[in-house]
Length: 190
Image 1 (cartoon, rainbow, N blue to C red):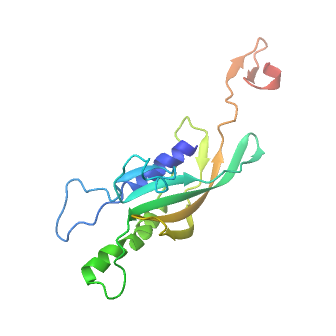
Image 2: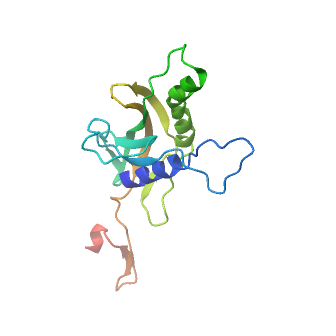
């Protein structure tokens, strides 16, 4: 379940492209995010971390509390934190030249682009899959973290409601001598 969610988020966020100059069409647009990964405190331990290009996005899954609703169906509210890591330019005062200030404040527009992509995530189970979940992601919180020397870690918190049917038994019919069939896994079939 978590892997499926992670890959769906990756697919949508890596489909955000850099702004194209007016009137210019690119055959292969350039992805906006240069790095996508699971969160592992990357900005806390930059010296020990494998270098990554920015802007980068890291996915952190909060602890998940599952509720069993019966029939081996489970559901949960899943909360994720998207860590959007960008360089810190520090040229944001009002008296900064316009071009520098525009570049320095660009990181504040990224969460809106992410919001648009997250609202477009629709995850449907494959034919053989027992997974099923809603397609509604809601943004719960935005946190801009300036506590790093060279980077800004903008954290966007999203929530969705999921269903997991992977524990359900798969029943198969087997013929009985009397002509009746009992499903595999049924107590009478054991």
